[in-house]
Amino acid sequence: MKLGVILLNWNGYQDTRECLNSLLPVPQWVELFVVDNGSTDDSVQILKSEFGDSICLIQTGTNLLFAGGNNAGVQTAMEKGCDAILLLNNDTIVEKSTLDDLREASMRHPLSLLCPKILYYSDRETLWYAGGIWKYGRIAHRGIRDRDKGQYDVEEPTSWGTGCALWIPRKVIETIGRLDEDFKLYYEDVEYCLRAGKSSIQTIYVPTARVWHKVSSSLGGHSSLRKQKRKLRSLGLLHARLKSSPAAKFMSYVYLLFLDPLSALVSKIGRK
Image (cartoon, rainbow, N blue to C red; front, side, top):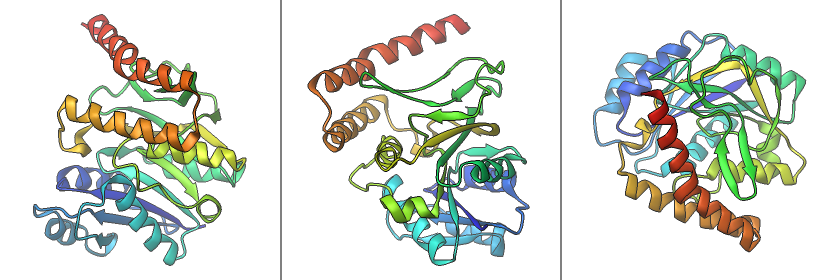
């Protein structure tokens, strides 16, 4: 097996550096691909200088956003013979055993998408993702903001995996294609996993593999209003792709605009 790990960099070499250092040295069956998505800072020069031949650096020349940038990395990785791809946010750090844990899980589930347990970088024992929820129009992370007490330590199928850290077998890409670049930001990963599900391809949550995420730093600190506008646009596109019922559409907007923010507020107050 050959795994291609794809990191997307956009004016964020500090995060990319920390992520790469958490991965290195990688075993012989792993190759690291860094896609520079049209950075305007010194990212390219710094990454070349610090990591040299340890990474394959791909320059898009312009910001292709999440789907387009990752698709550029996927194309190069597949041209170089990779049997599987791990999409990995550059604002993460990876536990040393995670790549091995995912590879072992891929042997149990050779034609499945895989997603690790993901925790907050700022609070190492608090969950960010322990499975994906897609129910009654709601899109959410199972376990988000819960303390990790082992309550989500069962390897099992889940509705969708986050593109923050998503293992994709080559055969899946050859079957259903790549990320949908019509999604400018948000829900590309949800659409991809649900599209896979239509071809009887499961998404498996692998709790033994762990990643810590600096939530939202890879987006460059967009305002909440801008973030919500992009989410609304992508949510509408997702429903168009899925041909969702009016009830599912309505409930998804209720969750996005009201119930999920309220839940986050209550959780924040509870931690104080």
